[in-house]
Image (tube, rainbow, N blue to C red; front, top):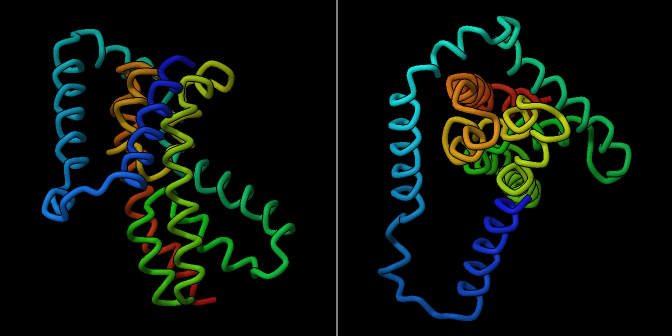
Length: 200
């Protein structure tokens, strides 16, 4: 929980700085978050490669873990179906289109905007950003109460990039390859599923 509070504090601090302070436009053009993420991925890679037991622990994982992305997709669709009953002004297919962004907010937002308009595209953007932020903040809590795979499923398509370091930290190094595999499959599925539901 302490790690989650630290992450939330930094996010809030950055948000407040962005609102109340004026930074030069030239400074904002540099994608610092990308370089920070690359540094984190590099550090995690060194940590995993340095630990001789990591791959042995990975081999001991249940082979059925290969179906994790499918279960994440099924769980997301089931959750979206339940929530759709409270969204009277949105069709089920529109809700499914937003949900199958799986945290990949940049691509899903653009696709949905092209097919369904700016309003639903914005909803998709915010919804998928929230999925990523919730995973970053609550990953320790998820692992503690729902198991080591829960934070990976919650992260959706982001588990091979932005949420990867926090997942490895909380679930363990043996889940690093699982996290990358899960993120890759969901990343690949986003354009197909979003386009499919938008076209219905």
